[in-house]
Amino acid sequence: MPTIDQVWQQINALPDRYVFYTRKEIRYLPKILVEGERILALTSGFFNKHTWLCVCTTKRIMFIDRGMFFGLRQIQMGLDRIQAIDSEFSIFFGSIRVWDGASAFQINLVPKSSVAAFVRTVQAAMDIYKRTMVHDIVANASAAQVSHAPAQTAAPAQNGWVGELEKLSQLRAAGHLSEAEYAAAKAKILSEKN
Image (cartoon, rainbow, N blue to C red; front, side):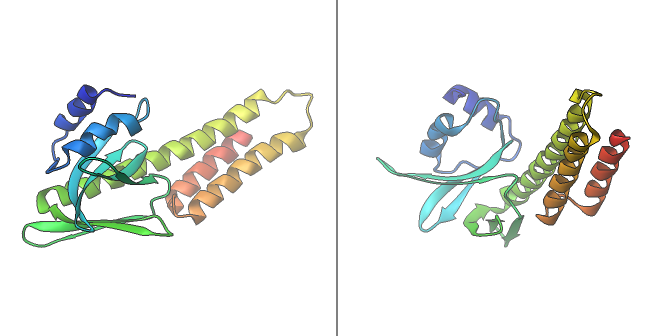
């Protein structure tokens, strides 16, 4: 777990951040961030008459509302679960809506200057996370091929790459991979099979 000083160092390094009235939420971040998880974007806005902190990390998006003296409301969405992130803004303020396929969470009165930066950062983090998932699947398929001894039958080895192709197909069907990403990963698995 990072310390509060490390959290503030990450926040201060962000080019576009907005932390209006969210110091108590920021003080809570060291308790929920895991080792190796970095803060990529941070802003705040209003939902249900409360100020919420919006945080995008290398693993998830978190919306946090900490009570003045006690209480905590927290919504988390893993980057692999997010289906879409939308935004809109007017002259000074905007809103950010994150949808995971089953539900959506919308935060309003976000300063216009931080809306676009937050959305761009989340989209980039989702893309990196997807690419990492595909890379891991391909690496696992390659490792499975290498680890099979020649004395084994071809059927178990075939199940390894077939299983990886099925996982890729599921990622594409869930919207986590584009057709081009799917085709490239599939071609790599098939070329390593031979």
